[in-house]
Length: 302
Ligand SMILES: Nc1ncnc2c1ncn2[C@@H]1O[C@H](COP(=O)(O)OP(=O)(O)OP(=O)(O)O)[C@@H](O)[C@H]1O
Ligand SMILES: [Mg+2]
Image (cartoon, rainbow, N blue to C red; front, top):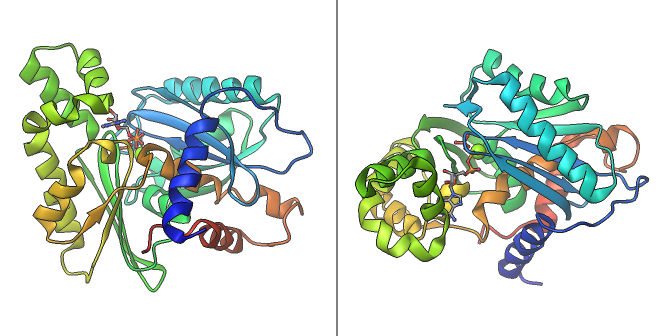
């Protein structure tokens, strides 16, 4: 399989496991990634090779600007997503890795860990979103940008290493607010309208200034670094036209993988180190597991 077909196939499989019921054998070692975001909380379960087995998500306003502001709400939503997964797979989950936006302070990212731990799971890793995304993309040179609901976070990679990270407010939530204001709609309706790609063409003129603002943030984040390609992930990267706008504003070619909403949570699972420690994986440390995962799925660094 060529590198250019691997990623779409992996993401198509991920989309598929987000729906339906498929049991997971209790003896099968799994990795679990929790992406606790401003808009969506997504949990994805993979096997040790990073193949998606199950996933579930909910819309919830429990994180703002990278900070868990509603701890009880976050516990509830992650708990609901996990119990949905447990019902659909017949499997109990005992450990997970959780994402944080880059550049969040230690005290704030402790809250992400505590949410997971308060549900009885061992939190085996806290990983920043673009780094998690890159476990799937396997980018070695360039910038991985996670355009989520509330913030735009970036990791800049050179020779396979992250050399800089940054995160700034502005994301899909702001697009929704602009749409609601311009079209005189309640927020929920504007959100639904935006989530349907069939509407993107006619909505683009309204949200273009906000997308340009996101692109300006990316331009500022990459300035001073030698970046030759930008990989956009996160739900807002699903807005048709964003790659052209980011390319125009930054002067650097930008691309969006299929199903950008699920790239970060899928990659987060690769950082769940429990299976390795439990001896279910011959790779004894988490970095080796992440590297193997990226090599299996390399597809973004063309
Ligand atoms: N097909 C789509 N087109 C445009 N926007 C979309 C689409 N699907 C989801 N979104 C938007 O993506 C955002 C959610 O993306 P994501 O789950 O990556 O963010 P998050 O992790 O919740 O937020 P953050 O990372 O900023 O904390 C929401 O604003 C949602 O409206
Ligand atoms: Mg996110």
